[in-house]
Image 1 (cartoon, rainbow, N blue to C red):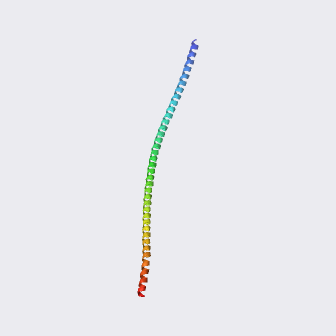
Image 2 (cartoon, helix red, strand yellow; image 1 turned 180 degrees about the vertical axis):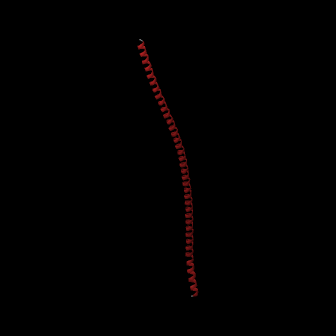
Image 3 (tube, helix red, strand yellow; image 1 turned 60 degrees about the horizontal axis):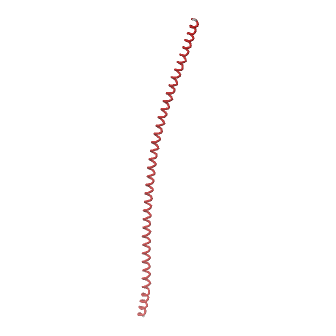
Length: 138
């Protein structure tokens, strides 16, 4: 019985040692897995922070681009307004010059008609005076 107990004790001790070795290996593997998991989580946090920084930078760039676009649109609109205003002023000036030219032409026509009427009235008197002078001289 002693030999059996001693053999059982050795078997149990050997089994206990093997179990302790397995527990130690499992514990080491578990620690390694936890370290890997922490490293992966740390890497994920770093990537997340980098992505948030990239998104933030992109948002700032987008806001700056939108502001630049808005300013450019406002500048173009102002230039269009200035061009339209200048064009309208030029049209008004051209219309005024055309109106003045029409009025000058009308005045010239009236003067020409008055001159033609004066010639038409004076010519018969001149002819009558010339005939009277020729008769008197004659």
